[in-house]
Length: 75
Image (cartoon, rainbow, N blue to C red; front, side, top):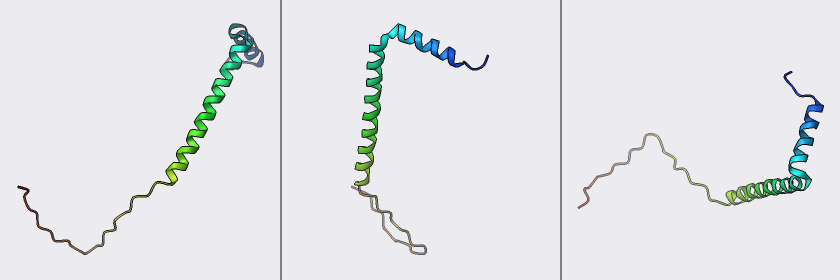
């Protein structure tokens, strides 16, 4: 009783087709496919533009060196 057989899924599919009709299901499929295609193109554009950005340079600290500074108040 845990899983549904193929016959259960075929009956569910038939009911969905009767409720929505094939034209609406076809349009929904096109819309979903277009959305996925647009998402993939956006991901490609994002990765391409991310490669051209300059990286932040890291500063290296040398152990054993002390920088002596004098703090002044701003007037």
